Amino acid sequence: MSFTPSKSLTKGLTSLLTSGKYSDLTITTQHRSFKVHKAIICPQSKVLAAMSDSGFKESSTSSLQLEHDDPATVERMITFLYTGTYDQGNPHVGTRDATPFVGPILMANTLVYSIADKYDIDALKIVAKAKFENLSFAAWKCEDFPAVVAMVFDTTLDTDAGLRDIVSRICARHVDGILASDTWSDLLSTNGAIGLSVFKIAYRRSVEEVEEAGGEVEDRERHLDWAASCNDRLHKRFDEAYEELDTLIKYWSGYHEVEECESCADGLFVNLRSGLVGFKEGLPKKGESGFL
Image (cartoon, rainbow, N blue to C red; front, side):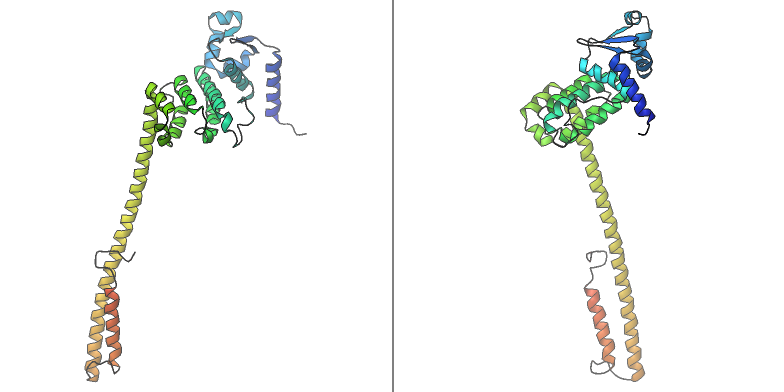
């Protein structure tokens, strides 16, 4: 069996959390208490460290009261501080059959994201956002998605676009469905911030599409200009070739002292001249690029 230091460390920390051995701090929620270790908790959260180290009541009792936070979310936060991850709560979330379970899991990740911001745990915010975004493929089909969007906007700051942009992008891709839904109409009428965010994303997408189309038009115009330039050069070259051939025919006829006719060798030049004229007439007019 190979030895992996990180796995061994995680196993040891998990054991400390599970057993509560050597604990010097208790985090209490509405329904549960967690025996934790300051040396593990405090370095990862400036806010929890300040509550533990300062003159607050919590510091003298070695207890942190987090009664206003959701107990399950606090548990996920603590688990992350010891293991670097947390359980989303359903074994189906990693599969494409996750749609029926997506709503509650998105809500759980939203609350984790929010508590990570509250207690200044940047790494937890990153993980919560990633877990949330990984399920976004099934979000729109989820019946609870309007409630998820409402929770995202209710639990995050206006300046924090992390989860807001994700749900707004999903909504922007389904504007027709939103406009046809009474549930969405009620939500948007009561929460203008959601409608504004969706509008901004939709507008940004429209601008990007227009700019992309404009770039394609510019490329097309450049190709057409190049083609027209080539066509003009062809016209000029055929005019020059025609003049050179005409001079050659006159020279040939004068040298042999014969009239041009199609029944003698001179007819070869006459036919060649006629072919050049016909080919040129088949070209687009000067300044055009119709042959593309």
